[in-house]
Length: 263
Image (cartoon, rainbow, N blue to C red):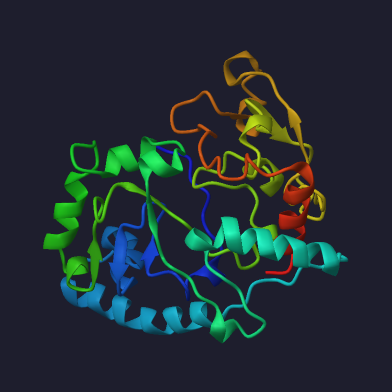
C-alpha cells in the first residue's frame, strides 16, 4: 500500500489523465467505476453503472475551486504572477481572469525530472509489482471505456492544475508536504511531522497549508500516536524532489505564494 493524497474534484474538468501517474486516459468512466467490479455480477450491470457516470462527469465539470477567503496583497501577487509564469507555468499552466482562457498542458513529468517519491510509479510501471493490472484492465469491460497507460510517454507523475491550490494541503502525490511554502523550498521540509490539530479552520495563511510541528520517528512513537505522524523515511512516504522553487529568494517565494492565493 502507498500513501495517496486524493486530488480535489474541481480539477477533473482540466485534466486529461487521472491518478498520480496519469495512467487513466480518455473517457475516465472506466477507471471511475472500476471499484464496482466488486459488487456487479455481469457486464450488463457494469455497463449501466458506467452509463450513469455520464451525469457524474457533468457534475464534476461544473465544480468551481474555492475562492481564497482572506486578504490578498494585490501588488505582491502581481509580482508573483510574473515569477510564476516564468518558472512554473510550463508544467502547471496559465490562469486568466476568464477561466475559459486558461491554458493547461496536461503533462506527465518524467520521474528523473520531478524527483518525487518513486514508489507508486515503480510499482505501476513495466516490471513493477502491479503492472499486470494494466493488461487485465485492457482486457476487461472497463478497458472498452477508458485506457490505462503506465509508461506512456514515460513513467512519472502528473503536474496538476493549481486552481484552488491554497485549499488542498497536504501536497505531492503522497501528501508528504504540509504547505506550499515547503513545496517551494525542499531544504526546509521536515523529516517527521504532524498536524498541530485537526481543526479544518486552522490554516497557515503565510505558508499556505496546515499548521504542523516536528514529530518523533514513527517507530519511536507510542502505537496510539503513530497514525498522526508523517514519517518521510518510510517506504513510499518520501518528500524529496520538485526542487524547482529552491532557487527563488525568500522575497520571490513570498510573491509566488501570494499569487497562488488568487487562483
